[in-house]
Amino acid sequence: MADTIISNHGSSEKGANPLPANSVIVVLGASGDLAKKKTFPALFGLYRYDLLPKNVKIVGYARSKIEEDDYKKRISAYIKVLDDKVKKQLEEFLSFNTYVSGQYDKDESFQVLTKHIEELEAGATEPHRLFYMALPPNVFTVVAQHLKRNSYPKNGGARIIIEKPFGHDLASSRELQTSLEPIWAEDEIFRIDHYLGKEMVKNILILRFGNEFLGASWNKNHISSVQITFKEPFGTEGRGGYFDQFGIIRDVMQNHLLQVLTMIAMERPVSFSAEDIRDEKVRVLRAMPIIDPKNVIIGQYDKSDDGTKPSYLDDETVPKDSRCATFAAIVTYIKNDRWDGVPFVLKAGKALDGAKVEVRVQFKDVTSGIFKDIPRNELVIRIQPSEAVYLKMNTKLPGLTTKTSVTELDLTYKNRFKDLHIPEAYESLILDAINGDHSNFVRDDELDASWKIFTPLLHYLDENTDIIPAKYPYGSRGPAFLDDFLASYGYVREQNGLYNWPHTSANGKL
Image (cartoon, rainbow, N blue to C red):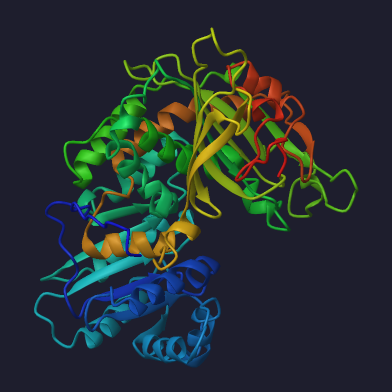
């Protein structure tokens, strides 16, 4: 686009050490859903854009005994082949993918894996390996131990990517950390929260600190509330047994939404280096008190109003007496000079009325006088779907009156950046790990601080069996009292029906 000015101010970590040529990437849990749906499509995406190390080799490792041809069919099942060029690239990609079957708790199995890796490295004097653990958390520690003991290169280096969940409360998180610390150094560990790889989340730093007009108003004097929302239009769909172990707060809020909150609330880092960025995020977390149960509502989806969609308890994998929350709204605060008194609302749920992840910053009312009940300004950062940033603002409605209308300054990515590729989150984060950039990964003290905020609430909900989640219909916005709950913290919804995004006509209708 001719009018686009692209400026690169060095977003990679200072001192980062990219993997060299001839490195080996090992995907553990290669036959599982996560690897098939996310990891391998991301690796292929990086290959298409020539972002993998030169002469890289990729090894899949899992317990399943699979012939190599069948394995390659599996890992390409979720890769879209759009044309002959992509088909050829996929064939090339598969040519340097191999598979090893083995157990997760046997030294002999990892020794077989290591022998296979060494054959691929063809006598490299300083081999480097990246281990991606697309595995359930109950085997994290044992696999990490076996990798370090059997598969860590003697004269080179290695990195390990660990998927969430990083424990289910503060104690279990610390236990996991303690089990990893003696074997893997902190700078070798990449704890992946895929929301930190999403384009709009990575844009928050630029948006906030690269625009003076936002920086001047980004504080308690001008902002009334901040909402961070996660909505899914589907329920557990037969997989509730797994979800029931965690619930919506552990699954989405303690990690994904809290990470977004730290990006919204942090102070300007002194540089783009990983440690400077993560230091500021930790400062936000340490300024947040534990969550008061009085500032929380929870819900569980029921059948849809028309009876066509099942309730959470209709899922045969869910215990019939489950009190698991599939919806929660949590209000938290940050006790520092910038944000003291501003409610931060984390809101997440399944089986809601749409798919959306967004940040909604609502500004305070303008000074009364010539205006009466004029709508508030809102800055909305839509993370998914259809990435966008728009500012709801008041303007004079064209005509012979001084009637006002709500409109927007709109940056919708698919309209503005038609010729640019927006990478998938896993592409972005795996590339960061390849480059040795920790900026978008969770540090150990950051993880500890986040669990301190949420653990008392989680234990309170787990232990008090008389607390029953409010029912809400499948396909609704959530519990019926949600709007009253938000209003009690000063949030004004829908601007009295005067606004529709993205375009408004003179009568306020689309």
